[in-house]
Image (cartoon, rainbow, N blue to C red; front, side):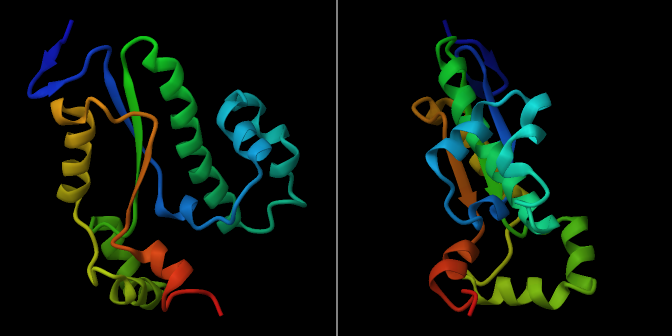
Length: 169
């Protein structure tokens, strides 16, 4: 049976977790590491060997691991929630023009952010409405075959990081 709330139809419910493009910049993990991040109970995550201080070198690495874990946990939960008719996905936005992004662009790291935007394939930052449009698709009647996925929407910044002008030298 379908239940409708506004224009969003989702048998059993539908959810979206907001992650970050940063989780997609972390190098590859082993299958075992992915599985541990996806399935370890939250209160036990910090006990994982891969998350010990001698393994996580800096705050950026910690942030990337946390955001990668968000997407992996969505994938794992989608399998279980799907048995009850629910759908679950993650959206990993890049630079989205919000008050926080405006502050970052005007702050000490602003030049780096502007460089990422300028060298991205689309050449501009995203908007909250663009994130909302993806959320609407994922949660609405046109997204009923979409579950257990993480959607990177960063204008191609991550692609440029791996294969373009933003690649570390």
